[in-house]
Image 1 (cartoon, rainbow, N blue to C red):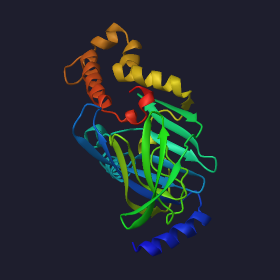
Image 2: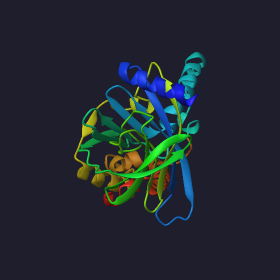
Image 3: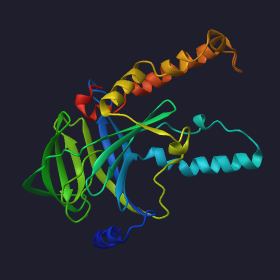
Length: 284
């Protein structure tokens, strides 16, 4: 899209949004798989900005919705019962961050097994805007720094994109954050593209699965629960089952206990490389 034309579109729609429209900004996130790793991983994340809020999450969590819909439609016609777990990829992270305008209260949503939780926190970002300017992906940008939950961050924002927002929990600069990285360069976001979404629905297919109840907890309690979940993902499920339940045979010949233990190990390996470490004072 022509840059000047895009800026006009953004200015216009920032004034006349309805809840069914959003501006989607794609951020490529480069991060260390774990703190001791010498290699980096890359994933695509998105920031959806509507009239009263923004939603940040792993792009994979919404990009598979059309595939899921097609599979379900075909299964209705054929009468089959497809195993979606074998057809879909698992997002690197399942959480989403919602920032509400104009005060930018931050809410963090995630699920632990089938339970959905969220916590809210006050926005505390003390930016120091520098005189240094540059160009990133054809956008004129200006430098700013801040300290946030255990790390020092450098951001490059562009006033030509009139949203005071950015990836993850970052916001509050006089323009969209185009690039953001921590001092140790363990996490780095860069704006990779944008598009306008019509008929926007902030809830993905995975959001609609399971219980509709979302439990509010404080941040400390959530972090404690998640730490327990990391160490024994299926612990809560196993505690509810009797020895007879655990010894029942599954269609593949394994016992329920064997299946759960295998799944427990699988989930532990996924969680071991989670990227909650963005905030080092979370102690993950």
